[in-house]
Image 1 (cartoon, rainbow, N blue to C red):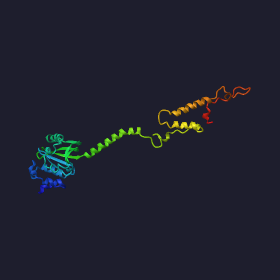
Image 2: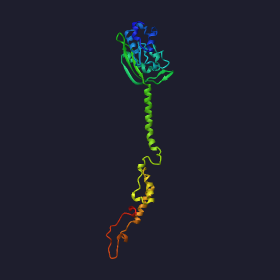
Image 3: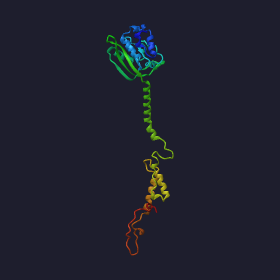
Length: 277
């Protein structure tokens, strides 16, 4: 290894693979014949901890670093090193092919976030999401010599976000049903709690039968319709008031005495039940 090979010497597996690879069997030729622009770009890729990928030349011969290698899974690595892009990415070429051509022909960069680009790895086609950008790399003559890919795989975060969204939607749809159709709490009390129970009026505490009917009616206040027993109690109370109402013609109400006119005592309109006697 000469002094010129030091720019390709970096920590990790890929630096050793690149320096030990027989590039003479590829369109790039041996490392000693590489143009300065290619060597410089490959050195940047190998020394970076960011996943990076380089396609160089018209045949798009590829070189990648250690940070990118886990995304290849099993089956593509290490075959992908020095391979032509179209041969390596046949399953994804309808997606990435036009973008690469745009970079190589027009030096037009691109960027995508959480983009779905399925690839073949681990023995099957997998749904893989990427945040990536394509940038032109210029050769020694100033023309576009290759395409530099700076990327990161976001499959795990995309799938996790999808699961959270589905869980939130299911919760929002089922929560109203649970609130409306849920069972009553222990003790037979309604969802409004014990504070909804109306106390027995003081005027009824001396009358157990009527007070019991009043309590039965108060327990039904959680619904909109009046309780039937409450209706019966009010009807019975009204009848009692009518039977016990003091009439103006009644001697007890008028207070008539021999030789005197009607009593000046005012007529009482409250029924005896309301005075608790």
